[in-house]
Length: 291
Figure (cartoon, rainbow, N blue to C red):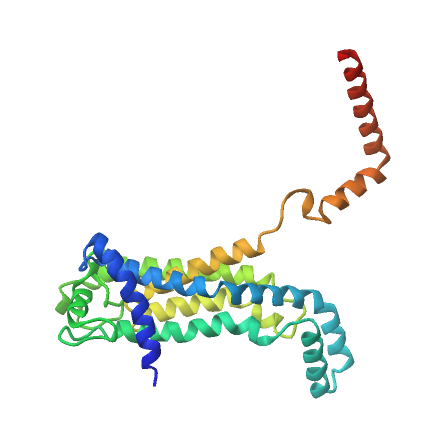
């Protein structure tokens, strides 16, 4: 049923591995790690347009916050009417729940598809979707900082792979902590897009702490191999940079009201007007002396 998804995910990763394998060697751990990283970058690049739609919807929702609060007061005793009026207001302003959730919804199947593909690198004699048996063997033998890419922190019988748990922890724990930090900062930035008095405001305040905790628990106790942690870290870092760029406040006179408002304020200020007149007179006198 999900084979088309698995073939699509593994196919993108296969293309990147061909490129980095040509540059660094097909059995290089760095080539396999970069193929995972660039799989994430490919996915997120395809999601830029839905992301911009999500940002626009969030901004409109902030502007509608006072009207939504008024609707909640007026229809506090009629949840059905409240839902109807809220949906009508959102539709009138071009806002939909789908546009706000689409980027996250699209990432979920890709994450589980990649998790399935990476955890299917188990038998060096069998192909794994877009990867042939030789490539499966190459992945199983590839190491990042001395740790096999299929290894994970809670993995039993690590001695079979010829490594100790502290070696796996030395690679996986920094990846987990960096991914958790990026998730925390991203959630804090996302709070700026949420209405302060919305129905989910109380829950959203906890997201900067709950989401990173989920990352740490998942990385520590679930079978998420090093390759998946690379995916997780890259995805979290992209989201953080993207949120920072989108939500970064404008600087200079354009921030509050724009350049036209600044000029209008200058014309209406007697002190500013007098200084401008003195500069104009001084420039006129210098021009006459040069002539």
